[in-house]
Image (cartoon, rainbow, N blue to C red; front, side, top):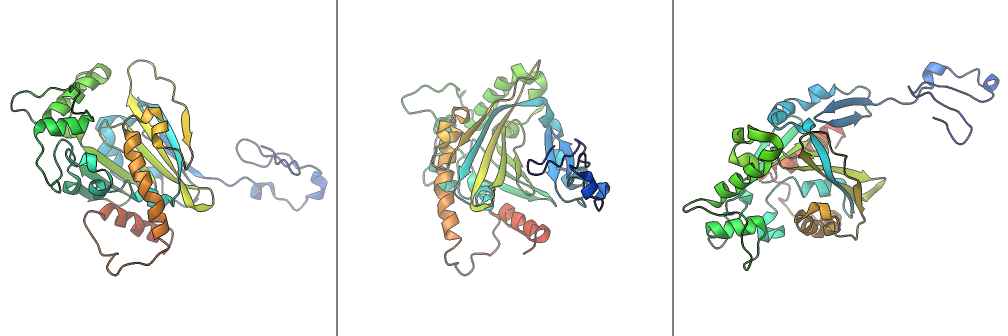
Length: 324
């Protein structure tokens, strides 16, 4: 690796290699001129980088998270889709939009007939957290009572004049029907292992966050989020969506990354399917939240609520690790 300015070069292990006109650099101690090192660890098929030379080992930092994912075989998947979008908001604002389900009623009204938003369970551990939002059940905030077929149609995004591709048996709940359909959809890929999974693992949103910016979804949901600063611009961020799918036989090639600018719609990434419309709803809010950060605050706005426990946990850890 060579500096294009004066031609200093380093070996691939980071140690100093060639110094032009070495006679003029007698003061240089090669052992002190190695490139900066970063700590590297792997888990679940992911590579984690930490520039802090004194950080704890990754295994220690992960805590019990690998135990949570042991039954879901994250390593046995491939990148079926990868989208990276520039968003006009700070990376923390973008991440917060995916840390809770309290926003569903206001942001995603089409989801409340089949998603128990404020019935979510929030769990906090030392370095990771989780929100479980029940699917196939209506929000308690809904002003009307949907039938089981209504719930199924909203869940599958099927129009009134279209036939459902999942049928309800007499007396069957939409939650059970959709879980059974998902179970059979995965059976050709992972075999009879699907019979060991609960209905919740097929249709609930089980969203984990590993501090500071990594969001793998549990069970066989394909979603993994990563939220990053966009260079030195604190008013924009990179929202990355990975779709990780299990496979049988030889590992398929990873999908190419689709890059979207701040004015592009998520729906331009065809691999996102109906998720693109949902992300556009989130994207509508985030620039306004960013603008709101520079406006006045309301008294009591920082009081603790259960719904945003995950957001509060994130900022408490940021305060501990980065400083208030």
